[in-house]
Length: 153
Image (tube, rainbow, N blue to C red; front, side, top):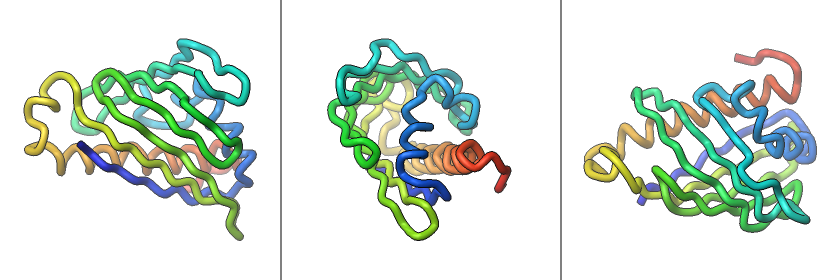
């Protein structure tokens, strides 16, 4: 099981960040590493029940394809999801206002379910964590640019 945490510092209000992240179809435009994002089932009242299919390009040269189902939300501060596909487990997203805008914390508790990652599991844990961190840092930079309209890279 991988326990991965990313903290994004974003110069925008929680509502602005939530609105950007909620537009799943736009992720590949601002998040390098996102090969595709497709809404499979639209959200119900409050955002729960939405299902999306995500394909991520790893900096290690492989692709991960997985589904994310939103289990509960409290916009613009919190969401919890189930993950199925190449990865299985759960994820959460929290957003808290701070003096500079907000801080988003993204947590994944997932395990590889298919392919070479599953077979090699513990052997590739370090490189997989490095690749995850790199994809997430690129997402943070991309979201900052997206919500501010300026390139801060």
